[in-house]
Image (cartoon, rainbow, N blue to C red):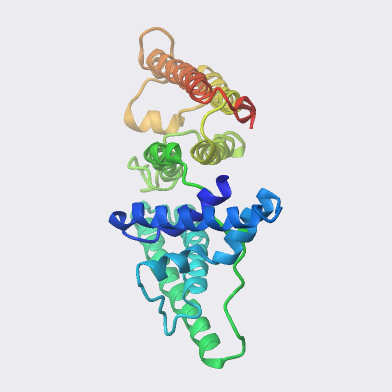
Length: 329
């Protein structure tokens, strides 16, 4: 048996309660092995015999439902699995995209973090309700109209991949990275639109020099977006030498301009330092002043992040020595 059989069994047993999975796995594996042996005895190619056996067994979720005597019913059983798969796919794609889009637009137009989060949550709920309703209505109409004779044809190629347990372990770190990056980007936008420091006319006085919006702030916001995509890639594929190098490039792309801008006194808004009574020479100066602490913090954090990336890549390669090519993907 190959991974194709393992994928079929996983697709079946994941739909039943934990207590019933061991027995169901044994039964299905016996079925597959018996069917494959019968075909190979008649000079079938083993790989072709396995695919034929799995195709004959049909949809693994339907097979599992028959084993545990669980009806697959929406309005009727014919389209239940197709409805469920389509609904899950559309929800996982549309709802996150719509939510993030509304959050970003609201932050940029209103500058209110609370209002942006409220609008994003409302959008997520509304999109979920509408997708659920209209998708269900579509399948009700299909089922009641009788315009087709069966469900969408199931093939072996539709089998899901086996679960990546390492990916599950990486999920908390991935979520934490997205939260941190989102807060960081939100803080950059918020300080420009809703700074707590006000001028004599009552207008917001941003912490960062507004001149940075001509290039450098969009540059750093773009790097934050790139870091989010990189975090997604690491979550899906894990660490490798390639990802460690990308992590190094992203770290340098952020740290080097930040340090040069800080050393040149171009980060802080002069109107802000005047309003709060800071001495720009002390704030951006060297030594163990506030400026020196900022420089040291940026260097230490960047160096630690780069070193941590290469250490993780080394550990990942050591944990999977039989798959050296995977380290370069």
